[in-house]
Image (cartoon, rainbow, N blue to C red; front, side, top):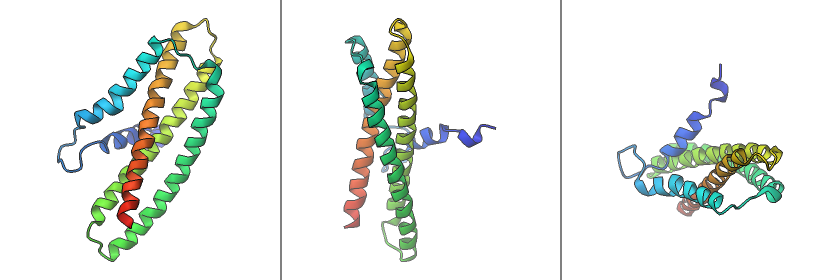
Length: 172
């Protein structure tokens, strides 16, 4: 029934892209766990502990995340077009094609995850803007989730940028 909106595959595929390509293990390296999970958690807890509140800037965050989400949807379309080009190149037997195909597949998973993150951040921001200041605990929980997802979203965008840069560099 919910298979049409099952988002777990996107999340799993994204975290699979964090494994080391040269390793045959499916485990995430400790450095990636630290960067993509521990660092956003730490940032979230530090910002909550410092009492940093974004209530007055929620509209700006919604605007920025919406724009980035739209950008990621467009980038996803570009990646799909690039996949078609790679399939055509396979017929001409380019030697590092399997690596490029896997790389583009990884970028696709990362972009899809970024879009998913931005949708969740938007929902949380909208919810956060509707909750009164008197509900301190709920405000802090939502704020911690927002900070965590924003930090992860930023890191995912940097990873996408780096991977696309590497891919385009190989094209030249």
